[in-house]
Image (cartoon, rainbow, N blue to C red; front, side):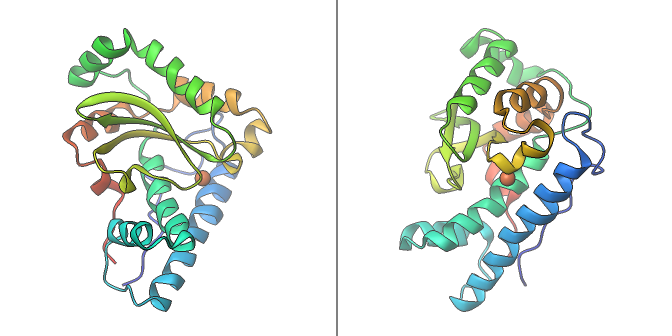
Length: 207
Ligand code: FE2
């Protein structure tokens, strides 16, 4: 079975005005879909049918196959990213709120850190909140790189900072995009669920 483009968990227009239907049409319908189609082509050519997405990513990293790694990792990163967004943002609560307060002081301070890290990331990449050694950590990874390929790095939250994520709505203003997304669209309930260490499985799929 080939990999599929997972449907968005909300209506295409639901994140407007912070992220427009047009952005989602291109970002999900064209960019994300292209990664799925290219990966499926590679999987057939390389005889990797039947492997899970996370296994294909690991295989590509192990064998130094950049084309396969970039495309398969981008399927996973985007599948995770869509779940990190919601039209009905609610503040972090419970265990997640406690961890954020003890490690960053407040949710506002954490968000400032995520925005600063993601703004400063040079060129294409992804801003991340991960669990690393059981502690919350803000970081960023370049191009298609993904926590799936980093042992011990458990994904909690990501924000896409490739230019295709914001150019339609914010032109070249990456900070404007990051401020709007973090203030209005973060699905903190999804982030909290990932504290169980099973974040990778939430954007994985059978091959
Ligand atoms: Fe993207």
